[in-house]
Image 1: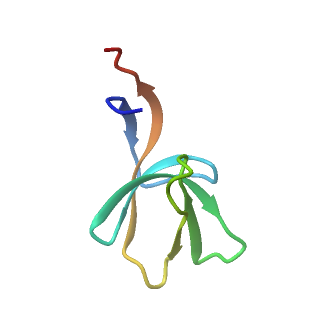
Image 2: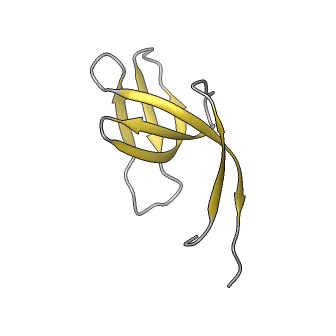
Image 3: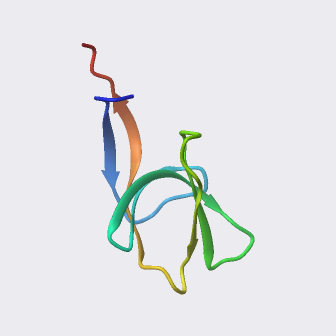
Length: 77
């Protein structure tokens, strides 16, 4: 939700299903990590249906995991 804060554990390692903070080229995104049957490909799945999944080819794309989500801090207004 707007105004929420995401608590992130800084790490470069993540597992299938983790919500990650990722750097892809020049952009930073928060998505759920989905491994595929191809070792060099990943899929970044949005929690919000208004956004499309992002396909990552590790052989071609500049991709880095910056951390994994460990919680949400919800601000009440």
